Image (cartoon, rainbow, N blue to C red; front, side, top):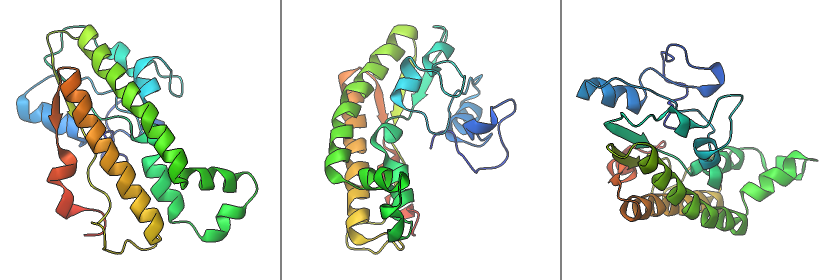
Length: 205
């Protein structure tokens, strides 16, 4: 989400698969504060892609830090938990859940127990990200920015999502928001509450 996929224009020099916009929040913040920007946001990134795994041939994002940074922003964890993929498959016709190969992945994304297991792992991974950023950029202010609110509040319809799937999406979103805040506090970072600021401007508003 931080990359700003689908927001035109694309960032100069960005890999096509990154979905990186020249008007994503890192670009807007850097322009507002007159800072030189190094933007390594990448659509679909997980905490592993931040810490130690290449993504489509691109080095781990943490390697972009050289210690001279004044400000580092981090939005991560949603893909570890399957947050947006969950909402995407929930919008598909129900028969897709019975399809060979694809159906199993869809059912897993919509399984509350599987999402809870994933979120338990996210908690530890976010802590590792916060610690690693501080180690690489000890002089920087580090901001953990949580996810914009996508779903309407409980009790409001979110077609074509079934009520049970929307409720699961809210639970994942709420947990990600809480974990982001807890991570910021535990690792000496600051928490930017994008979810709270965007409650009234969800995708169904």
